[in-house]
Length: 107
Image (cartoon, rainbow, N blue to C red; front, side, top):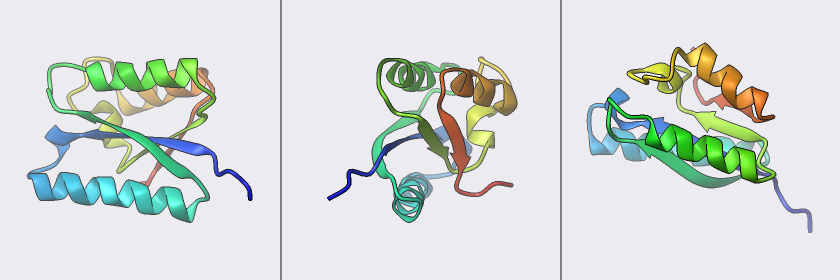
């Protein structure tokens, strides 16, 4: 039996309009992970538009573990309201730490 690599998730709740959309976004991350041959690990959910605590927790896990992949619903989840920068800048930050970033919806 082969162990599937772990994929971490990141979602910004402020990018979604309701709890149902948040649940659907999380489900889409799980479906993506399964389809791409990963096991979905922790899904970090940013709940405060003015903070980036969940992103920093995600980054800390990437730094201290052997996880090398992160999935988001769309790339906008990396930058929307994030004081840390644009989606491209945050993607580069994750990739600097050897974590490839995937988007369920690449638009």
